[in-house]
Image (cartoon, rainbow over all chains, first blue to last red; front, side):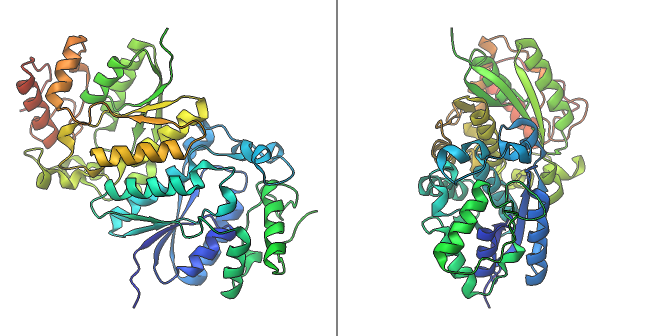
Length: 219
Length: 219
């Protein structure tokens, strides 16, 4: 039997839902961080849904200090989210500074506290241009910090670091994941807006993967 | 004029108070993390006192998830804190897993959010045996992760990593710091208990430094 030795950082979005299903045999605990983003409630509902389906323990950890003290359009309201492509200039206002570092550190402490050995995160290749804390150099250094800073040498695994969102969708489709029950729109409405950077990226990734997109978009 | 370019992780204890005074010209923001430890309220009061004296902005950030989900006698009540020396076996129950990694990540995000370039932390040589997230290998890897994971390459500085608590006290005494207005007892009583591991370490450090100890101990 595979050992349940992992904590996964799980937003309820498309990427981390795929990783959850791929690693379901090894995931002892899924953690969703609620940092007050516009789309937190809908993401959390999706995360709960998939964890319940798979019988995986799920925690929601609130990080209220982020919306109080950090600058980002992702934290300040749907109207501040820009329309358009998921490119550097356009999406930079949505960056939450060092978000992956913060989530990984907390997940690492949780892993050490429970005797678990791995922390999983679903950053992918398409994130590199915009988010410095999604790049391979960050992942490698953070892995070294987690191993050095824990008794048990907790390891970071980020298996999508060098693949695209379309690749992730292809892997998930083979597992039969219902992507209609994942949420990623930065505006946080009932349906995906269809025009913000993440919606544009989502549509494009399904198209590139050649997989029918089950997402309901407003426009 | 020296540029105010730094965030300091500031507990209100002896070590970080010394670093605050040493770096006062460069500290734009001091952050105290309240993770529900037995001694949080008294440490926070000391931190506020010194920041007000020096005219430095001070934030208290609550990390409620730690006392809820992490295992440590430091978080579970004064009666669980062991008496005796500050040695590995005795103090291991007080470890809060990956605490420095978590505090550094949040401080790094705050620094990036405010355009500040450095994060300061006062871990010292005496912590190495007990706390893996105080050792030079951790500090170096975390520094690399912070630089890689931010646009501006936020740097970690931990200038006490290779000196002793007695050395820190000698440096602070030269600056005229009132160590009577610092708090570190893990039991969190009105006065320092005098018998827990941190109190034993504190007494020994003043003795070794050859500096009169202004601390009021219960026994």
